[in-house]
Image (cartoon, rainbow, N blue to C red):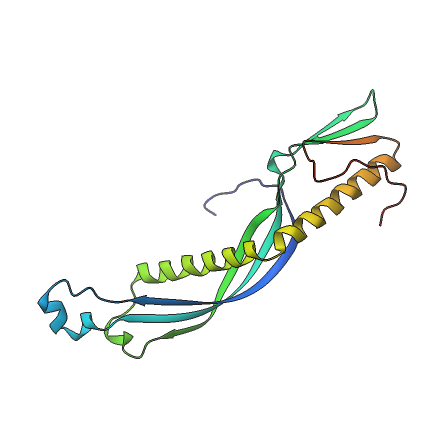
Length: 173
């Protein structure tokens, strides 16, 4: 173990993605010798298929919960917005151009491909409805906390979160 870090995250939705990443690195023929050497003439091309699980929810590290016993009130503030919490991706298919054996991919190329795959998946996740679904599920969790608090005879308040209406619940659905 290199590092241990305490976190408090609430995953409210997972999305499963499959993306194709293409890589092409062509030589710039910086010299006449490069042109003459077939190794430097052939482009390096690769295609990856990547499957990923994207977890979306809340980083609860900044949330504040205060219990005021005199008023029997629970106050919650600093609720975060939902965001992509993690991307777990795996390369399930890798193909190199038939001439690539003459001009192999470098370690930097593989690192670039991995980062590009994750960036494409993150972009697809952010353009999907995962953030909205995570928000809806997060609101349900807040509703559940409100229901439990009010069923115990306490009142429940949220400060600084306009998207969650302040309401009283007699039942929880």
